[in-house]
Each structure stands twice: as structure tokens, then as C-alpha cells.
Length: 56
Image (cartoon, rainbow, N blue to C red; front, side, top):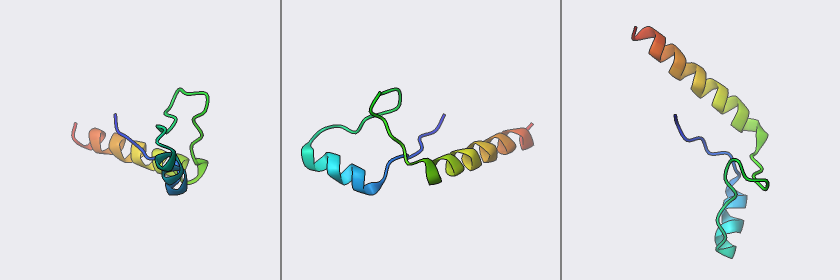
């Protein structure tokens, strides 16, 4: 398991200014930035899988 940032810096600043916590995964208000989140997640997962397969 790994953590992947999924929201824009502007949204983080906006929530910090209000003092409210950012919506997290499994929340009805969670809204990730699709690109580059999806691409980065696929690349990172693929790299981790290939790394594990090479160690066997």
C-alpha cells in the first residue's frame, strides 16, 4: 500500500484557509484530479509489481 496525492495544490490551500479537513477517499465529496492522478497511480503500481516480480 502506498499514498498518492490526488488533489491540486490550490484545493489544499483553499481547505487550509478555512481550517476544514480535505475530503478523503470514500467520501461523497472526494474529488481527485483525474490527470495526472490516474497516470501516476498506474505507473507506480506497475513499477511496484515489476519490482516484486524481479525479486522472486
